[in-house]
Amino acid sequence: MVMVSTARMRGNITVDISDMKVSNRVGDVLVTYALGSCLGVTMYDPVACVAGMIHCMLPLSKVDPAKAAKMPYMFVDTGVPALFKAISELGAQKDRLVVKVAGCAQILNDNGLFKIGQRNYTVFRKILWKNNILIAGEHIGESFSRTMFIDVATGRVVITASGEEIEI
Amino acid sequence: MNYRERILADVNALPAISAVASQMASIMNDPDVDIQDVVGIVEYDPGITANVLRLANSSYFGGLHSIGSIRQAIMRLGMNKLFDLIVISATHEVIDKPIAGYNLPPGELWRHSVAVAITARNFASGLGIMAEDTAFTAGLLHDVGKIVIGAFVEKDFNKINAIAKTSDLSFETAEREIFGVDHAEIGAAVLDMWKFPTPVTRAVRFHHSPEAVQGSAPEVDAIHIADILCLMMGIGPGREGLQYRVSDEILSRYSLTPPILEKVVSCCLDDMEKFSELFSLSSGGM
Image (cartoon, rainbow over all chains, first blue to last red; front, side, top):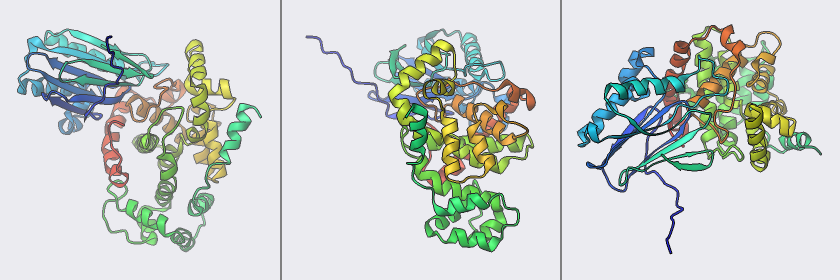
């Protein structure tokens, strides 16, 4: 008989809003809760067994440069490069990176002014394009609030939204 | 009894708010109120007094650690801020509870409420609209109706969600379709029962439909925008996620642009940090 685990993934390292965490400890699971229009990104190097996660609120740091200097992870354009740097310092290599993204949701009548989620995603795509990296998995848009996990041991990325659990 | 009557009946089953808060609420509209009378009302309750002084000395409200009495709090911070502090002390316990139906764990509605209060005040002061104090109080209480309606939402979540999805309705409109009432109207009924001033009750009542208010009510607009922004930022969204609508009329009334809104958002976390010292709030995750 094949045993199927129904246990839900549980995180032991929380990535807050405008926060970033990296780990190379097998057994660690990084988690970020309640991604609305914010951008959640995981990066994983399966050879070095290094995982990183960031939770950015806003697309561009030019809206508040002083804040960006103090809290670089708040913005996609300052946070995502910081995540590249942090996982590289733990031995990850760009050509092996598995990059996944979640969040970037929107309210029902997003009319442009509030398209923070879509702009977060656009700025993120531009950074990846410049670095020659493809997105390996994503769960974005619509009006969900999402929770994102990454397991350092396996690189599995799981999203929970509206009571459902999806691996991307 | 139909749903609406049953839910409204449950409002009366909520615990009464502290006598200090309801007495203060009823005198807030009186311009001739005497300071000594206010001191007497507040100091009647040593628990509220201690909380108010603790809050008055926090970095969010002043941070000078030099306010030692209710009289000093009134002199330094003013009557409106004193009222905010009393409301915080008097409602923290009830708003801090887990909220069924919306699947909000303990503390999450409080975190959302504080974020909306802070964001609404920042929004109002940033745009120079005279609504800062009402905006804070109303922000703190805008979702108080969820405490009552949550038990009904829990039983009928799938029904509400289905009608919202198939008819492209915002979640509170779908609540109204199913129950004949939504969490905003129930919140206003709670505040009526607690005898809060009309501007606060009105802001709670119309926080999802600000264009329905007759005349100018900037505090309603501030709560509306702040609520949407905080939900988008992931500060306390419930199971219904971002299934809400922003009022285009309000956006154009204040000529809001993405940089203005993003600046308001970027300041919110810092202010929550200052506030969190007092209630062990976290600015991130659940």
